[in-house]
Length: 222
Ligand code: HEC
Image 1 (cartoon, rainbow, N blue to C red):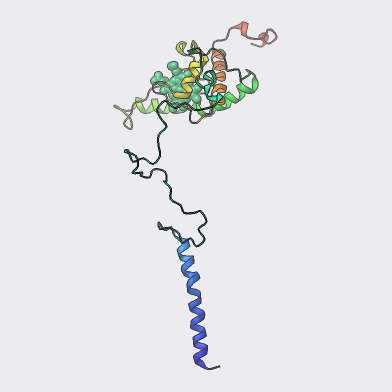
Image 2: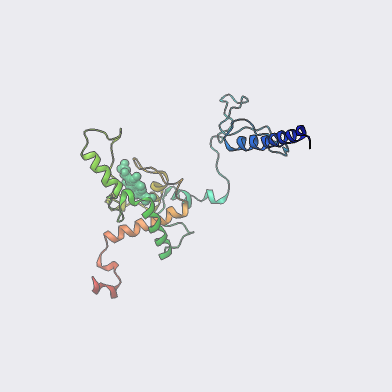
């Protein structure tokens, strides 16, 4: 075979390697440009991305806020006892009808309480959780605010101002927070918040129980 053909084939062979190398290189690093999309289907179409501008509105927001006074639809949202802990404009004094006060509910409440509440309120609800202890220590040893803030001690759930509260009010504190405590409505679903309320009540009873609360056959063991 003449040399010229051998060399031509060799060079062509090497050149053939270039496209896959370029493609592999392009795929291996992020690129802010639009991808080369040969079969488009409906991949690319005019739309407003979240947080993008829309000149149609005076405030230029493409994401429109809900109209003032909007109320979520559906019966579940209308149930004030379940969602707000309110019955006839007063704090509910009972669990919503969807719940049965049993060991299952209390165990669920205990589990959720131990996850979400113990860091500050402690396992018994006395207000001495580890986060609280650490913060109190920092504050005690500091002159003035720590990290630009002061610490408000987590309240004891056995404080008389809490034990007299109806369950609906405690539910509300968990949902929306209270004074310096943040709300857990966005993290803990409604059902679990009620389970926590039931467990808080159990904790309260456990600290202030009288002999009459103990079943007669168990009294001897105390
Ligand atoms: C990050 C710490 C922290 C966590 C976690 C926390 N709390 Fe609190 N909680 C506080 C503080 C602080 C207060 C007192 C707020 C104040 O008096 O300004 C408080 C107050 C309360 C009160 C008393 C409200 C009143 O009317 O005085 C209740 C009830 C309560 N918390 C329940 C809970 C429950 C239930 C959870 C778990 C879902 C929880 N908290 C999680 C810090 C916390």
